[in-house]
Amino acid sequence: MNKKAIAGLLGAASLVTLAACNNNKANNAGGESAAKASERKFPTELTNEGTPIKGGTINYAIVSASPFKGLINPILSVDNSDGQLEDFAYANLFEYDANQRIKKDGGMMEFTLDRENKTVTLKLRSKDYKWSDGQPLTIDDYIFTYEFIGNKDYNGVRYDENAANIVG
Image (cartoon, rainbow, N blue to C red; front, side):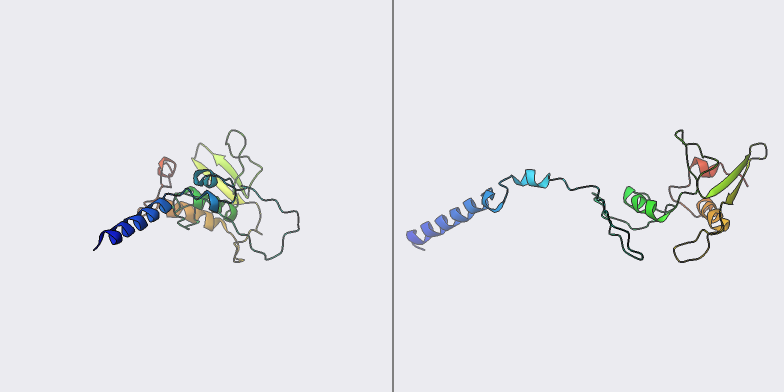
């Protein structure tokens, strides 16, 4: 290879290298750096003034560093992403006061506590509660969660000291 060809190849390689080092300000319409552009904030709340559409669909986005598991079941889920969606899917059976004590007159459940006999009696406030498929919600559905968590084969995070203390 002659000296002119080698010089030409070196010149072309230098141009490609310098072009790759360009900070690309010309392509950034706002003239801000790439780091600054990645810090842009998106709105975290959206308010609609209109009337909800019956049978409509809500699109909900979750920004997370970890992948979405999609369990959407409070017995099985272990991360915040699922927890955020569970808030939409599951109604509160109890309401709590400022001290995190169950309020007697709130939520979907009524309860009576018998400390001497170590029992809590629960009753749904209404017979009109339904699952999303139209099936009635029964107290057996609530009992199922305790039986599921208390099962010897369940190894999820919900079996903790509270579940271990259940007698009967």
